[in-house]
Length: 333
Image 1 (tube, one colour):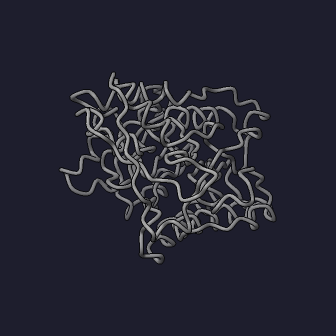
Image 2 (cartoon, one colour; image 1 turned 135 degrees about the horizontal axis):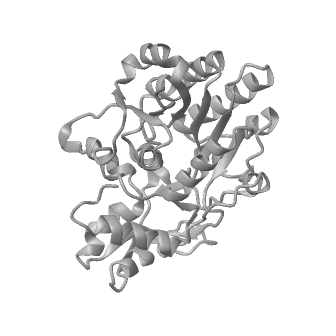
């Protein structure tokens, strides 16, 4: 009898490929990647090249393939999305991030297949409502995302909770609100790469890196705070959810501790064995009014449900990322 299958949408992307690596290493399930590899020189194919995936599906054939293999599919881990917060085509964002997610949910509910999906901390907007991951419909509805990407994730969280309340849910479902994730296999993301990956070439060369000045008196230059979370910690949460079939809901997925961009840059220099060289530049006027100065995931709900997995300290996560990947000839996991 063939092993059960797990389908990872967006499985050649950043977070998706790290999930694929972990699942393939465990060997419990056949792992199927559904994604677009785009151009060969972009390198997305290298994100999965080291792992014995069972099959590769193009997005256009996904539902046909799902129907064909329905009896053997254990779960869909839905990471596929347009993740750019600056994508101008709002209709494209909605089709990709909401409509497709809705259709996958409905398929999983009809076939009683488990679904774990990527939500986002962008659903919290400017953070005025805090970063509590209460997932009742009223709490979710009070959030005010600042961009179309955040809105698409917010809308699907609402859909999931509403459908679950109506008894139209997959056999297990969990949405994860990712905060600022960093780690290997993000090289294809261009301007959406983590700050670590963006400043690495200058850090490696011992040059000065630039961070934004603060335009608020209560924050120092480079003192803007984010919840930076190492991708291995995200994978740990997903692996735990796969072992806990009774857990359902929308949860934060972060480190639980806000750190500054200056801390992040200093950790990157330290991992390279170099003294920090940081200059502060004006933030573009176009983003000043909607710039987040603070994010921090409350991780209480997952911990209360029994999750006792790792929360990698920033300096350790950056060290692993730099020394095991960015500073090597082969930076792919």
